[in-house]
Image (tube, rainbow, N blue to C red; front, side, top):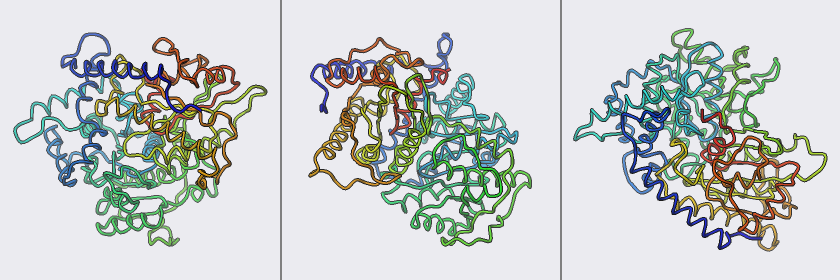
Length: 581
């Protein structure tokens, strides 16, 4: 089994690196400035390109690993930016904010919450991260990304205002995520939303969204290990950070957590007199009525839906009564010394909101002819376990072809300080015929949308990481092939599985961009995906030729795309062109 690129393929691979590096440098030096060109649509693209010159979250993460600083001071530095933008902290009180932190399911919980409240006829704002295809997805009105025209209007207004107010004591511009947070506040205030659902970026205590001083209600989703360089290397340390969004007298809700982290959340809430409640299970809320239908697939989404119901229910009570005191908790006692959130009758609006929730890139299935795409941006060990469980259940429920072979393909990438070896080991029991690795770049050129450009990592770094992923996959194959090397398998969501019987279970390939990876996987058989560049000749790779014939003749191809939301976003851009409109 080949585990490295052959010489001819490697030469083309390195040549592509050189070409793309040159185009990236040229794109950065040739940045357009206001006013934009007259070509339709370029004004928005110029706004995004200018935004990209600010330091992104990826850059901030890398910088934070090597710099010592006072995180509280970094949070407080957000206040001068807010003032320079023309707002006071008190102005944010008018947004009626629902603030959500957590490791897993923040975005899904926020999406459920926003959709429930929108079903009541309320005008909603929703700030989330990261985006999948276009950056304007991060700022939503009534569930829809703000238009390119609206994004452009608010971007340049804020950008010029910050430029005009800089002086010797102020940095000229906030970083990427801070800028978008400020912009979201301006959009929501000026567009007069009834409420804003705000997802924390990283952590909670020192996240720039935590400048909000008086949210209506807060929520903490399931906790896990992620962003250890910033948040700490234990779940207890991470829980302390996530609970940093708690405010005195403002109710907060959380789902069942491991004992240690839950105790940290409980103590953190008590220290500042924040009433913290544990959400009853969704099964408890369903009791006595028909079962709920969720718009998002996967068993793990039930926990997110239970939290969303509590957040939406409390917000509605607060809104209808213009403020509430401490909630009347359930009489049931919990062993964790936390009051159980009150039970309530689910309304038709709540049921319809949960059913109609859409959140692309999370347990999403696309069926394109003989290809079925399973997209989930799982990037932590716990979220990957949930992804594997969902994927296997989806395969069990599918209709099998009456003749011909089914092929399973993994398309994977990981970024940041995640451990790819752990994630790939969790994926191994899915019995993939081929594993494909590529960076999060859609194209090997700079002609695509500026929304997915990232100048904060080098091309060498992302490509070397892909080769590392391939090596990890090869090591897993060796362990399965050689009993002496095989470790005791880690139990998956449904228990341990035997080694894969598939003859090509360790076959792996590395491609230089998402488009090239999809060209090889689809073999021209996807009725939607049209390669934006001429079809590539991958015959130099020893696995590419044999694999191509297998894929070309397969009756059904199942492709799991996971490991990075940015990878999922790049794939969606090519598979669902309407998302770019």
